[in-house]
Image (tube, rainbow, N blue to C red; front, top):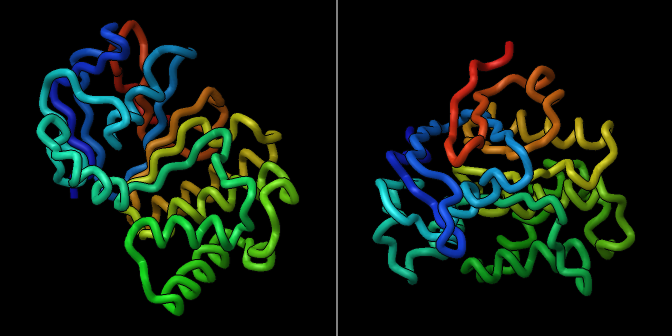
Length: 224
């Protein structure tokens, strides 16, 4: 299944062209790296996929939503099908791990407490954090916080995960664990797009590689 389909897309930020002539097709279960210098458009490209930044021109579809004509009321439904992993975690600091996850499920329409508790237990177990549900974010290491962020991204069983520099605030060994985990998720059929500066991951965990450069998105040969 085609999850992302961009054809001749142009993306602007504050009236400046960030990327132009973007052609990008991502299928279910594909692991894709986006590399490039700071300011080259990696984050803007990811943000366009969940309508944080509008598409200026071209043809853009994500999970069968037309991003050029999507209605405001449709945006939350699109975002429920996308898991987002940020570099700076963006956990609610005044709530426990359980409360962070509960908040997301409630905000995305879950109502049955038993179902909510069961889903939280499932995702925490998946990322090896079942025994940390009562902890506050500040009581967790950076790697543990990022595992919770991945658990949060998995809550609604997304078809697409967007990871924007997910290892940027982690030590190398912990960063490697996080990328390995994202790679495993893609093998289960979820498309994963990861922006990174760390080129070592490209050899360790092979995937499709795209480079943002000179306002263009260029495909590189995969590293095997």
